[in-house]
Image (cartoon, rainbow, N blue to C red; front, top):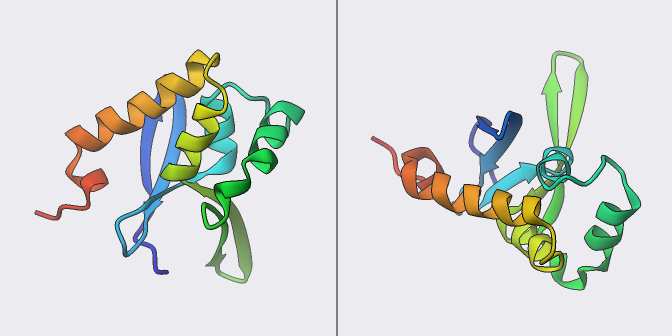
Amino acid sequence: MKFTHIHNYCFEGRDISFIRSDKGDLWFKINQVSDAMNFAPGSLVFMYNFTMVADLKGQVGVLRVQEGKAIRTNHLISEKGVRKIADKNPDNPDAKAFVEWIEKTKNESVILKGVSK
């Protein structure tokens, strides 16, 4: 799978970066998703939900970017994976709001839709 460049947005004052695959799928940085859904970074709640969603296979990954001699590692989760975590937490209004923001932003943005001018 190949990725396009990183896109940066803002959700409720939080930085959200995503990349789009050559298939049009959106991938988000896991730490930013955790923050947007109001799970503490590395918290047991987020890790529990992340590891307990058995059908997240293929929905998480690692992207390594070389910057000079250094390699930066980004842990990613697909939009589908984000939705699955939100579905497992129906009482979390932040998770629901984040998924709604993704959908709204996708509908308003040609970048998220994968349409080029």
